[in-house]
Length: 84
Image 1: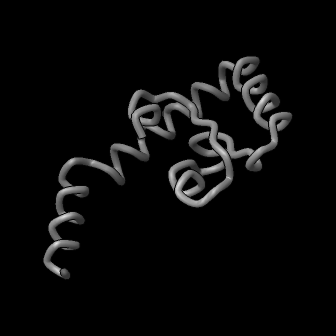
Image 2 (image 1 turned 90 degrees about the vertical axis):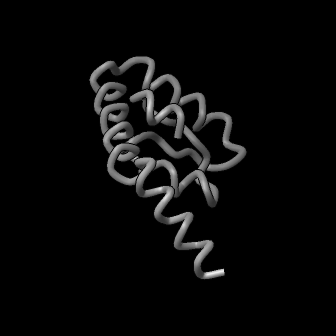
């Protein structure tokens, strides 16, 4: 989330937790777990395409602002504790 908040495009493996944090093709790129070739390709793709990096980074930042604002996170946390 720190990378997204800094408007950086994200690359991660397509595993639980990560695939929820990264929206493939919208906020970053997902690669299969343990696939070094796919990771290399994703890095090269972002390194070579300034427009793609910018678009993914801006989308990532917008998502953090919309879905993970301090108020929303605290509200969700308080609701979780109330349910306990």
